[in-house]
Amino acid sequence: MTTGFTVFGTAIGPCGLAWRDDVVIGTSLPDGGAAGLRARLAQRFPDAVEGPPPAPVRAAVDGIVALLAGAREDLASVRLDLTDVPEFNRRAYEIARTIPPGKTLTYGDIAHRLGMPGSAQAVGQAMGNNPFPIVVPCHRVMAAGGKDGGFSARGGVATKRRMLVIEGALADEPTLF
Image: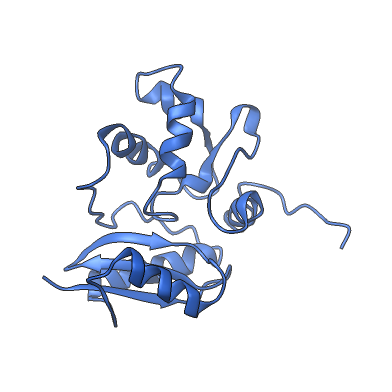
């Protein structure tokens, strides 16, 4: 069994992806520089060795890069290892993966699609524990009324908003600076 990871450049900064054989076992959004991201991936996946990914995983990397550059890339076909993911989270992630680029759902929408109205907070916790950000597009899941809600990646809601602007789900809002 081959376990590896790679760090690659995107429009929002260096991202990371780890795999076992041809299946993605985790992804990482930018979290400081590439060196720090490498260290965090090595800690998170101690058996992984940095190197070039196999073709199916390379396709996932290319898809992430394209998506974060503004392409309407669909990452739903990327194979994920969900072995250690709780059943509720797995089901929530499956629904999140159906949200196309440029669109959003709310935590409550996902709760309803799960057949569990009233579990919006649990959906939010599942998204906050997402081991596959971007591939499982938790950034496309909003709080009630289309509000940002939380986002656990470095940069928090600002990173979430930036990704949604790139995808065309939010207007690019002018800033004072």
